[in-house]
Image 1 (cartoon, rainbow, N blue to C red):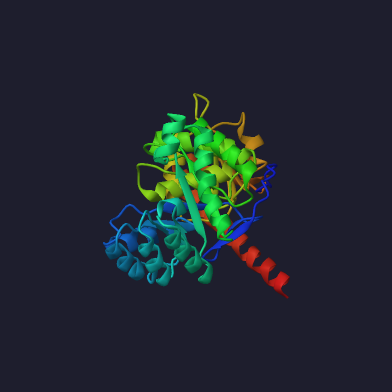
Image 2 (image 1 turned 90 degrees about the vertical axis):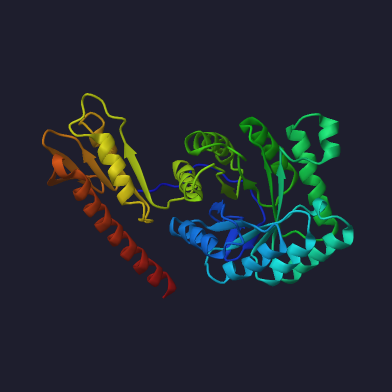
Length: 373
């Protein structure tokens, strides 16, 4: 029962990162970044595959050396997700990974050095249809900007970003996206708002160095939610000091909460209270782990009593309403005669959710076939 978001998105140009469109009317893509040594090909490939498994649209890989560039060549051949190479200072590394099929270059033109080196990278990117991401960070602004502003401000981040944008403009290259990240939520939000008024290129959102799993997820949800709710943002990364897989999960949860992406199960559950007729917390935690692999969009409500349960169940694909010994079950908003034994809720719910997902997937295939015909 996914409903479209009321958010009106900012109009932006569209670029292609591999086979993933970014900007325009494309879905907001979710990214992450590997944290394994890039020269450890097996470990990096394994991590990328784990990110692919949870739905990551794009994966970024740091390529700090030529040895890492050679490893990147092997990595690229073994994964499916579009790869962004994160490169600083050495233009030769950018040229090398471009030769090896990189899907996007994260590189700040102003950090590459002489104009002939910048031009070499841009010409190569143009020739091979490789977009560029300009990545500005509040913690690493250019020295002269730091001295002039004395501390990171939204205006300082904007000036840094536009400095790099102007270089690409002079070289007549428009296939790029921009980020202006900061660890402070208000600084990041204001920086993106200023930038959104200056350019129509896609914006890559992020609250950089957001923190650990819990605190970082909260900070990212607040900051990215503020921007996304105003229609700003075309792709995002949640930066956590945690398993990169968690970054992807949090990213999709943010988009689902704003009805901007409909991937996977949207669990609607109560915090539980003395009215609960079964252990809501234990049920939800166990069920959430079991159904992580399901990517079919569905709303599933699990409410421990009959106060709010029926109302939530009637607007969900599947709904459970707590009752003594056996709880009520709703399908597509309709109360069913079938009731679930409170001692075995997780198994029963998982079975019905998987059955419903299979039916929805089959119907989707039929609809696509009819459209093609």
